[in-house]
Length: 349
Length: 148
Image (cartoon, rainbow over all chains, first blue to last red; front, side, top):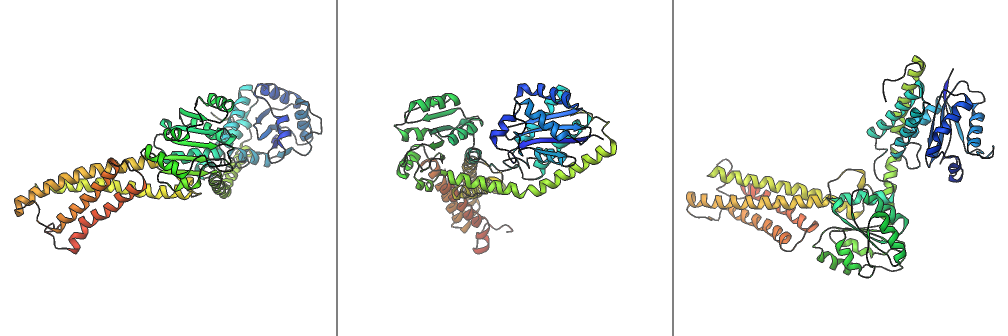
């Protein structure tokens, strides 16, 4: 009797130092799939390797001994000590293995619950294995059902809704303020990591006009080049803010760079066009009283994280409903598998 | 002639109703953005800039139609009642309403104001409009009776 098994390491079970050592580079996947099938005499296998998880899905002929063989394969392939997995790996057999894949695809096992990237990563892993010829009738059916269940869980619950990172919250807020986001101008003051991430997210919305100001030119130039922006002098902030619609502030200054009277003057100069200010700096660089001005929307790091946390809570509250969909789909799959055997390949993807 | 007067006035009401709707949506969303409501992103929304713009266009359209409707009405009054302005409560409150929307437009177009305060004024102006349309008939003696 064949059954689906999975050996894996994820952010739940292993630190990043271990995960990065067992991760499969894109170019080495075909070699790994071939080696796995040949060495363990497996009919079907799929390798899912992302920054948060490395999982080897296989159809094994019998339960005995395969956990050790799989672990042995993983450590040998990556030239690691045999005991290096050291409790960081998990091994699931049916039905837990199937349930695990369904939960992964639905985003229930993700670090950020409900994130949608994982669904694409599962699809890619499946596609790569299909191209390599490592997928048979069981895995065709398993992965297609898991992908369908993942989509359905997101469509029928709010598990994937609401931005949950500071940068994506910044983008979502901008979309609620501005009508034609791509036509807007962003001004970046400083060059912190979150500022860069927020800028990248906004640029992905089609914004072309990006101004970068930093006290040190050596920091400003690479950032401006990486996003196709223009470096402007840090000296005349008021003129720069007058031209911008969105300002991302992330400098190490220990005082307010802009005060309420300054922004009041700027708003008159820009004829009250809305201004969205994101102050990620700690200590804050923008006087909080600026937020009281009409048509000015000022968010600091706590405000943004508050929204992230609220959205995450909402997603967590959807986990139960999402799990029910996953369980129903999983049971349906297992019934079809047991009832019909695994002899019928599905018609299409 | 009375039909065209009534039709134009009702068309202006429709435009002002659009201004009311976009105005209320603007004020609700702007308030959530200002309060930094953590649940703000849990539901969809129309951008504030778009609501503000549609509110402006609706007030402009409503104001033009209302002005034409009032001119048509005063010419009708001259023919029917002998004078362009007869001191009828409906005429009086129409002028007040016209003045309120004129103030909204003046603030927007000459002072360049936009956002919460002018949108709020447009919403309040609709309250005047509602009184002109319905309240006057209930609380005063007007010759603009719906059944008369």
